[in-house]
Image 1 (cartoon, rainbow, N blue to C red):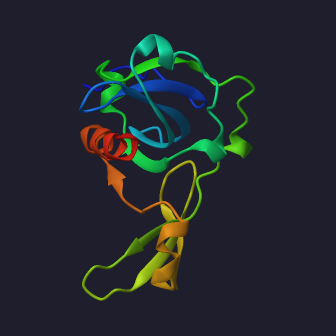
Image 2: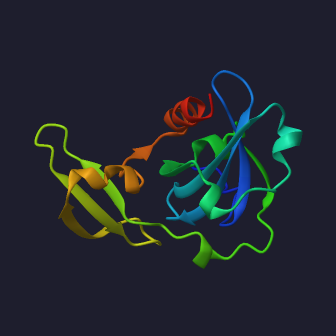
Image 3: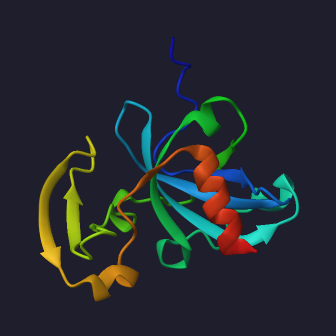
Amino acid sequence: MRKKINYAKGDYFAVPLRNGGFGRGVVARMDGKGGIFGYFFGPRLATVDEARDPTGLTPDAAVLLRDFGDLGLLNGEWLVLGSVPDWDPNDWPMPPLIRVDEVTGKAFLSYYDEGTFECIREERVDPALASRYPRDVAAGYVALEIALTALLS
C-alpha cells in the first residue's frame, strides 16, 4: 500500500548528501503515481535548519533538473520544509530532456507531458547539445542523492 503523499507542487525539501550536509530540491511537477520532476540546488548546507531558508531557490539557480521517484519524501529521509514563496508553475517548467545513445552516439531531445510524464514528441539532435539540456533519465532517490552529492562536493 502506497503511503499518503506529503508534498505538493512548489514545496521545497532537504536532500541529505552522501558525505554529510544537505542540498535542496523543489517539486516542480508530479505525475500522481510517485514521479516528480524537480529542480535541485546548492550550496551544500551543514544542517536542516540552514536548508529551511528558501532564499536562492529560483529556477535559474538550479544545479540539476531531474525526474525522480518520491520514496525519499514518503519515507521521511528527505524532509519537506515548506513552499517556495510566490511559487508559479509557469516559472518552473519541465524542459525538453536529452539522451545520447552511448553505442551509436545519436542524441534525442524528448518533450514530455507535464502531468503524466509521457513522452509526446522526440527529435534527433546534434549530440553537442547534450550539455544544454537536462539528462533524460529517471532516478531513484538514492541515485539522485549521489548525483547531487557529486555536484556539491
